[in-house]
Image (tube, rainbow, N blue to C red; front, side):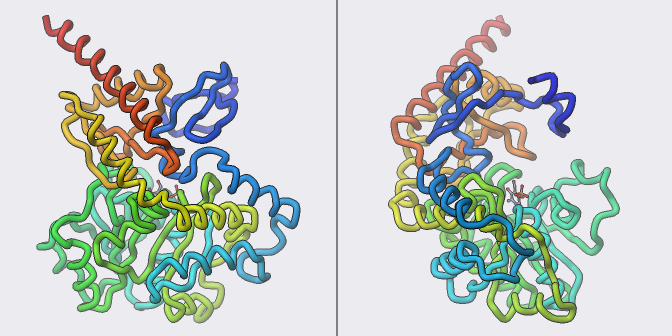
Length: 400
Ligand SMILES: Cc1ncc(COP(=O)(O)O)c(C=O)c1O
């Protein structure tokens, strides 16, 4: 199978982990030998309720028995999509009331950027250095990491970059700016939180010059930082909110949400301002609705902050220089990319799944399902510490 995996299925990762998955349940993924791996990654912040959560599985099965794809997006009334959009609105500030459902995060970013251009009649987009918003042409155009996009130029013009958390650069947002797009907490960059009321200051500047603010909550959203959306920590409401990943509870989804006034612009001049065949798919929407209900009705979000403290208390080691992030969106920083690689691969052998971040080679991703138990967290941290001890021993032996 590994040969076929490499021969027939295209990869873009030069060194795929190539674990053959047999099944997954709760906080564990099992390989073909039935070895259990404790999951500290959650499919890269996507499996909010762990693997095969019974409420999500039931919602999917029930919907499968009713209907699957019946019509392109937005023509027929399909209850799961309507209920999902309504529940999002109920949990958001009043100005964020209408949601467009897409197939992926990057497509939701495309929709949000198009809406900002359509609404303002302006073309300049301002993004942040080291930002990641997805991999289609528009989303890649606002990615703040030249090395990964150079080969794909020309991308969309009139995109400029500011430094996240540097308020002196906010003067670059002007009356020519259609929108500013930021991750609420920068992910690929290394889980960088906004500091010193930065997002409030961005909001103020956008209001002053009439630019729209898009916040990408594809990773921090849906409870991961202890609140339903990361922006709730920073006193800043965007004009357009983009979600994805964890919203689907393990199924592929994206969404952008704005006021009705803004969103309705996509109906007119031109009509069909964003279209998709499968966006809002009833089976996916049913899974997302079950996920969102569980996150908003349980105490999972509050417990996320307790779990963060548990990780911070346990992950104390000379080779962990810092732990960044919030809630269960954490990144441990080691002294070097080499140690990070050794730790991720060593933990995999010991039955713990960790992963890299996109642009920060010294970071280790710790984004377990929100449903992970305290005991599982402690067990995972102990594996990390024991692998770090071995790395440290090997290092000191090779230095003698
Ligand atoms: C902050 C952020 N934006 C956008 C995306 C793109 O989402 P997707 O991979 O679903 O297209 C991601 C995915 O990693 C992300 O983390």
